[in-house]
Image 1 (cartoon, rainbow, N blue to C red):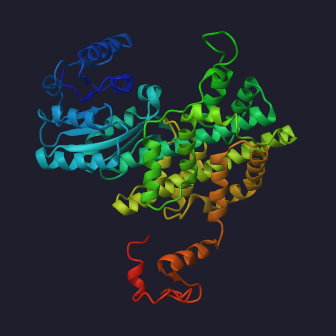
Image 2 (cartoon, rainbow, N blue to C red):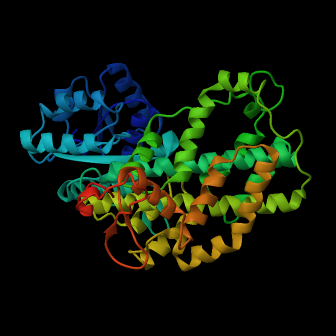
Length: 488
């Protein structure tokens, strides 16, 4: 069998994506470092409809089974395993072939690999983010490829058929040169971090302050999922809260899960990149920091015995709090998306990627973890104005945020009065309040910098940079422009 594409790396994601491609009518050759998983995948293909998948026992056999120009998707652990897999497979590949890395990879690594493969064998390399988890890989994920356009054109028919399908097409498309696909997926995951933490904070308020049971919260999230908050994460939250413990038959599983959140690094990368690009992303940053805090479980247990907060919660009107929570969550999600999209735009400009932000929103509408009804509006806003400075100033979103900002304020105030941490809800409010201000107290901060370091300052009434002789001990600093070299 001469196969249309090969997939190397057969953990569950790899197996499921291979089966997805085969079910869409493509002949797939699969390979893996350990042959047992090859046999498992071939057997699954038979069991799930006699799908056109063949196995291979060596890298040479794997590559030889592919039609030219060869197209290979690798799904192995990021980092050194990717380099090792590329080295093994590329030995048998030729000029014009395509290697697609579908893992969560730090984008400079993809840039490096692309350069190395082009210089050594003129093999195309594509870095492609895949979102949707195991289920998405099997049924249709969001696919975010970045690499040479020539290479994308070769794999596009396969990607378009295997991606999630929404009303305006497949949830994939060409994002730009190498690195852009990994970057968009990285920011997608950062937004995902923020979205999950926002939901967790709303859950905390509902159970601690409002006093709702798991079943009541499940019903509420299910109701919210029928309106403006419709999304995958709201949907699964409703399901999670309804499930009983499967080991003890006593209570609900969510109450037995240890409050320590794991992570694999993409949220940290997003925050690092936000700093590198000088883009404020406080919701994403706060969500990452909260995961760090959750990991210090034993310290928190010890601290709870010595540190105190409010001894009782304020009396609240249940219906009003629930209404405010819905509005606050929606507004915070808009702020979070605004931060993520601003980061993509900054990186795109810095790297000359020319990423279409409206296309990013469209690709996220199906298959992926952050898929949400809200993305229809985001796609429309960015399509209407590709140069939109920030999502929050779009006429539709600015009106929605203005209408909901008091609800967000009441919820953050309630959390402060109750001693309940709300790092991402408060970060969203602070982002909104900072961005909407024509003036900030940064003038004092810059004056302090000039006082102790001679860093100079701009003035509101004239052009240029200036330095003030603050005390008798201060002296002239010469050419003021030399003092600000390297500043952003």
